[in-house]
Image (cartoon, rainbow, N blue to C red; front, side, top):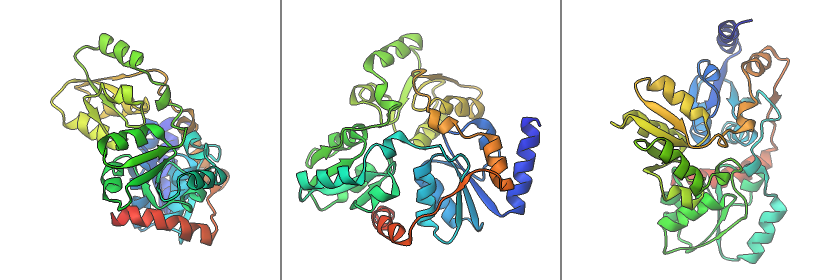
Length: 303
């Protein structure tokens, strides 16, 4: 089968089986072309919740599919490749968090959306990279335990100096390895380009950026900007997507190291096979866990 033939079969089957396909921005272009919605993890879960379909397929990683299930417990949710996980979401256990809560009593526990559902059951507030500063600023508590990403947490802390922060020693293994030297090398290679970075990067990288934002915010900025050249400081698939969206502009990866193998493991055939009932995994969560995890997510939605 050709790529086009597989795509045509996916489009036919998703209509036949009443499936809403969600594709995270880090998926490849071929998957984008069969998706009903494209975006960041939380925004996609909301789209899945609001869609009329009775089934959701999340083309991303496990915590994203779990978030879909939490927001849409009455729907069937599928992850097309069961090994697609997020190292940052999975690097901290519930026991780790409980120990930290003992160490920092009285701290509001704020979790990045990139966490497991089980971890969310122990948290006060869930945030996304685009909402973190605004929501943490609104907290009545003046002490915050931010998990699991210390880079995003440090960025939030820098924006809210009146609060006291504690962090977990974790982070996104892709964004965290980018250094100031990588920035200097990219700027030397492309001196006329603007640098757009994700706040999961180290502060030394964020400090050099012309724009800091979530994945979709980076994409929107590049599309709307009058500038013609951009260095993209997040997962390298965004370079490709922007090339398709803005063929009159030039986009360069900040580093070859910004390629997420977990996001890239999902293929068109994984989607096709899941729709045929011979692949993928249905996400099943205990009702009590869904209800407990929903508390910190609902607080984010209300905020």
